[in-house]
Length: 245
Image 1 (cartoon, rainbow, N blue to C red):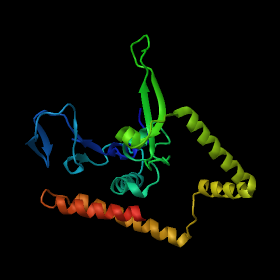
Image 2 (cartoon, helix red, strand yellow):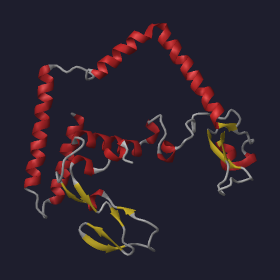
Image 3 (spheres, rainbow, N blue to C red):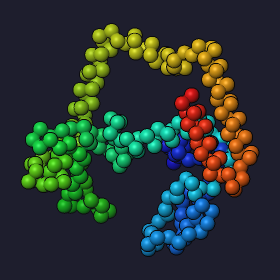
Image 4 (cartoon, helix red, strand yellow):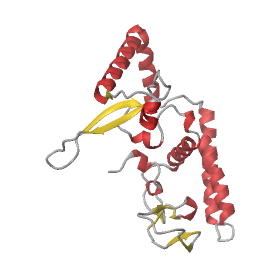
């Protein structure tokens, strides 16, 4: 199933045909247009290649999303990877975890954060699969054992339900205090297009964007094997300017 994340990270959705995103060879991979030996023993699956080694044919088919949105999403993702501590939500493997409260609960005994904790019951199902019990436990105990903290496991469903109830209570109190009208106005403004631009300012932004796109097209039209590195740098700079706009 295609997800929004796939659409905002795969160049195919902006109309480009991309080859060599992954290496499936056991002994060689394509790097800078040349076949080079793999280092070490053959892996168990395909390897991700660097974007510099991709073979890209631009505008090979109809685009589903704009290049501006695609580049903005990529820049945001790269920023999250470089500075994960600046974002309050979960990153890495935690971004896809079913334990919604991992890292948000802090143990008053040892100071570690709580995390998802799964245990298997001794008796298996008729199909042979294990019966799992989901809960939360102190990360100090999970990683260091009783020498750091005591074993206390809270059922996942119970604690998440309680937290959601507290959040709902706070939201209801916020809305009942007279903030509902303000919230409605914020939603209406977002639906209408967000912040309003002055007409002249908007025209200037659109002209700058058109100039950048024309510059990129000019660079691609004059691309040669000898100036490819220079062209790539210039296009990257122009794309950054587009994101800023």
